[in-house]
Image (cartoon, rainbow over all chains, first blue to last red; front, side):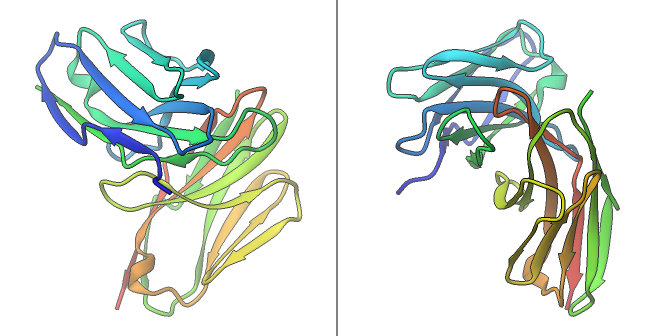
Length: 114
Length: 110
């Protein structure tokens, strides 16, 4: 079975542009979460979606938005990019919400903002 | 506020030299404590979940333990392929949100 797949793997943008990152969860997983990992830091929670509804949001500005589609894939959108948005963006999927759910991470999308 | 602190930030070991990584946490309503391994440029890879104080889990040269305030990842006779960043995270509340520490960068020299 394929794991969590993310695209693109690398991208370079300039300040003020917007970006869309995509994620396909493991088959059967209904929950998708997004994390931002700045170099040298641990991942920071951005969003969680379950059954196409937002179930959690981290401390990120409104420039960050996401959605989940009927096939459980997800997109993360970032508008008006800033230099500080340069990071590895990780998508993770899990079966559900209850209990201690193991999150399986994708390889990430490396965003560089110039 | 939920918080996770890992120490040391970096650790250099000789092959075969056993050691431990520490993860201290404060959380309301712990649902689980997770250990992940992350190689450069890749996403975190799941290692263990611990649910309650006193629990222990093992996988090859790794053993994770949990108390009410901290978790340890013991590495016995490490090999160079164990070199990676080890991340600790806690899960609490009504969602799957993970709160991560900053990680311990482990380098094992042959």
